[in-house]
Length: 212
Image (cartoon, rainbow, N blue to C red; front, side, top):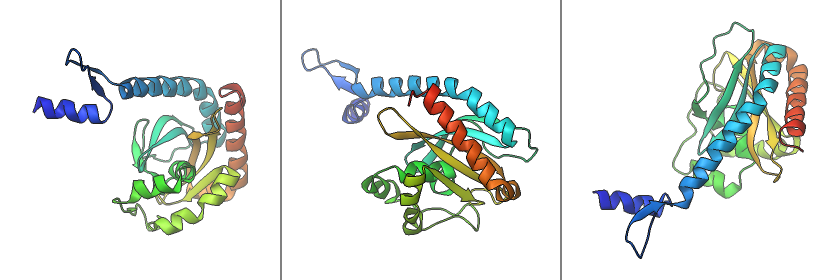
């Protein structure tokens, strides 16, 4: 019923009931969601030139991403000059545990949050190389936080591999990351150079966009 729907929305902070007028108004979470979308739109706009340069230099696919539950969200994607077929587009939600973007962002979540995310959600295999054990996934979190980058090797798509590096907000939080994906062969042969270019891209975004 409409009453139950409004009650559910009220519970989640999306609407609030005015006790005096008994009418419902927009709740605080609606405004928070709107503010977050505006912030992400601004971040997309300002990071786009950096992603275009990274994708052109490497010849792969450069992405800006965030975390939504057990999914990594591709907020922005730029395709370089390589001819490999890439299965994702901007706006897609992908299994975080099978992507460099997702691994990096999960590593910056609290242990309690990671437990909550995967309590009733198994780590599904995307390829024979996908890590499907939460315990094994966690083992890399400490190193990922220290080095501020993560990688996946043929875990989401057996043809591809990717690296991701953290964007550290002025508050010190890691809410977004930059990733670069290439064919698995290109990544293996050029790992150090690709990581160096990725880190330089993130450093530029931090200085120019995030003012860090």
